[in-house]
Amino acid sequence: MKFVDEAHIRVEAGKGGNGSCSFRREKFIPFGGPDGGDGGYGGSVILRASSRINTLVEFRYQRLHKAQNGESGHGRMCTGKDGQNLILPVPIGTVIVDEDTDEWLGDLVEEGQELCVAKGGRRGLGNLHFKSSTNRAPRQTIPGELGETRNLKLELKVLADVGLLGMPNAGKSTFISAVSNATPKIADYPFTTLHPHLGVARVGEFQSFVVADIPGLIKGAAEGAGLGVRFLKHLSRTRFLLHLVDIDPIDGSDPVLSIQQIWAELEKFSPELANKPRWLVFNKVDLLLAEEVQAKIDTILAKLNWQGPVFSISAALRQGTERLCQKLMQAIQEEPQHH
Image (tube, rainbow, N blue to C red; front, side):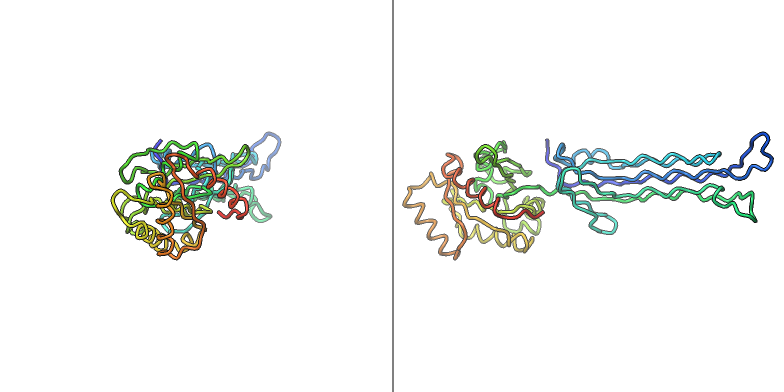
């Protein structure tokens, strides 16, 4: 299924039921007073996070979502039935924004978490409420109120422990398929990944973490160049960034320059994101001799003045990937979770 990470919908809560104007009419009761009941409350529109769905594709086909209206009141002091709430399941990791005001309404990050996005209208009052010693036959009622109406933007941010960062063709798709159960498209041309893949990397019998493969970035991605601008936001939830680097690019590009370009895009898009723990992972080391690999890595690290963790792997041959996953699992367990 195509990954759909944005949707625009309109939600309309139900109208409250009107109050009833009624008088008691019974045999042998000559002075039957007012007995008009209240209306029912309008139904609200509620979004609920669900792990059973992972895209917003359903909202592309149905844009308008209405909750049920409340029933009007009846005679004999009968209250109208409340309108039923409309509960819309959304993927875990959905951010809700009011399109008309740009107000941030909420962020659903846990299974079953709910957010009321349109409150149902208040019920109307029947004429029973207006009875007094001076007004024994009131005909006054209060109509039910309209429910809230909102135009919403739903935005899905991938929930993952580790985000893969790197230039197109750095080997991210190969890496995620090597360490997890994901099956991304892999080919020798840029922008193979047109939508994020999530994979679960298993480390031992009961330990695992989620990896998000993000489409490759190019210079200017934060301004909209290439595919990066749509997917940079998915990295904002990750706890660690793995920066995959092609140690010996076929096109002859300078790995140092490529790394610096990615860092510049991160800084432009989100300084907070740029401050996340970042590990450098040199990929495709199987294409070089062992002594050449170390010499290249030392040269690159010296130019970058890099002090963080460094790994060398061959994702295609699964060389060094197991050790990297074990180190990641250890770091994830030690790092507290932040959404």
